[in-house]
Picture 1 (tube, rainbow, N blue to C red):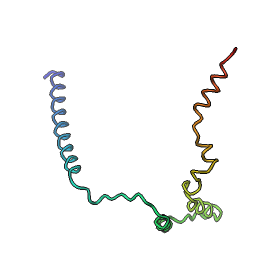
Picture 2 (picture 1 turned 135 degrees about the horizontal axis):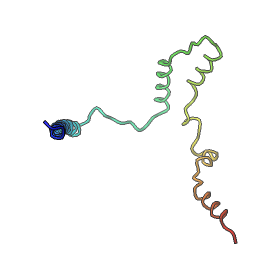
Picture 3 (picture 1 turned 120 degrees about the horizontal axis):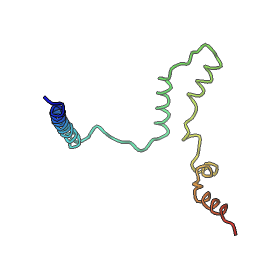
Picture 4 (picture 1 turned 120 degrees about the vertical axis):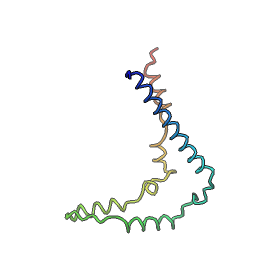
Length: 118
């Protein structure tokens, strides 16, 4: 058997197997989509009470940092218990608005004036 004929046969078999596998997977995915997803419920409102309960659960699950160095242990524990970025930065804070402002148009205008020569 020539090598090119053998390659064609292998390609044909591989294509058939891939087509079969894809059809099977697509059928399974369609079944999952059609099934009513009653178990999935999304909560959008997070109260501060829920946040504190969640943090307490996380703190209970946190590993203790016992490296043998008291200073390092306290630093690691302090870092692990630090507040999140959402709590630290207020979105209405003028500093935060200044830092997150889009300066693209300003930079374009500066570049345009830089290249301007009367």
